Image (cartoon, rainbow, N blue to C red; front, side):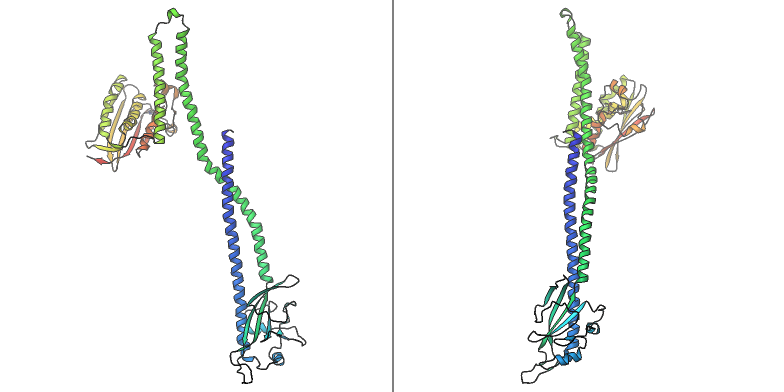
Length: 457
Ligand code: ADP
């Protein structure tokens, strides 16, 4: 499988998992919300029925007849109700008269039962399939043969009358039962609408989630892909860098071997070339290993306080010979106070020497290189300034990349591998610092290292 397919598969897998998780969460919350909405509507509906039943009960209580066969009296006080076994006028407005805000009288129906559970009177709009005997359950949901649903509440009716000793009712005792019910047509229609919204909305949302998952997984894979590409580029560059000295080394050795045996005396020029290429190879491999160690942070040595003043003084002395060989004036400006940073001395040496060696290398004869050490607030600042060739602005952001050279031919001639600044930057970062560069072509460059210092003595 090539890398493109591998990344595509990883992206697909990431997008699928993302879509499954997001889709699951959203669907669950969608159904949860819908359920909460249904529950809230149902509770409101029951509260409304209860309140109507309460209002009716309070209105009826003083009017209820004490007699055992109350149908005649009921007909007088409830002219809108149908009394059992008597002709019925279907123009009920009882609920309208007794309750506020009930605009549609076809929505509600009431039924009155005596104490034994026999139906006495009922609204003409009650469902036709209702039984004439009482089911005393507090709440009931009924369904007619046509599929219409009703929800009904049953409460005990109390009479305001006090009955005599001959077994009649006493004040506050049960007179019978009142049932108030309502059609669930509006509620069911609302639920149906909600169901459609869920059925239509959830696939749409899942589709959107799938598209956004694909896009988001692409975003998430991008840094990995770029890092993978950088790694591949690095491997290719490393191989290329290793191949040139190896090829030249082999060519030199082969040329020597092709000579007749009598002439195969060790040629110093040849041996020097082999040694030069060998050193270059060895330097390259050492630099690559150092970079890997720095990036993986695998060094086992503990950091310790390092004096920057000493490092700069030592390096100025060490590189003075190299500078004077090319007629470059190398000087240093170091503050009187000692500045220490926590780190590895060998790495800090490498950091400053890389910048100083570059400054000397890229400055023509007669130029100057100045290394300075200063203390700014909580950081130590090491500046390496030269009057050399400078770096074009558009190249300045790339010079810290591995194997990047502004002018490969020129740089290769100086023996550079293109790893010097990458190593310097990696060391600065390991010491919680950074390197900045300002440069102008033809006027020189200034590399400035900022490192957090620990103490000033
Ligand atoms: P090299 O080993 O080729 O010097 P570096 O990583 O040290 O690689 O530097 C990268 C590139 O940055 C070099 O090829 C060089 O062109 C440029 N460069 C670095 N330092 C300087 C400097 N002081 N003046 C001009 N160019 C520089």
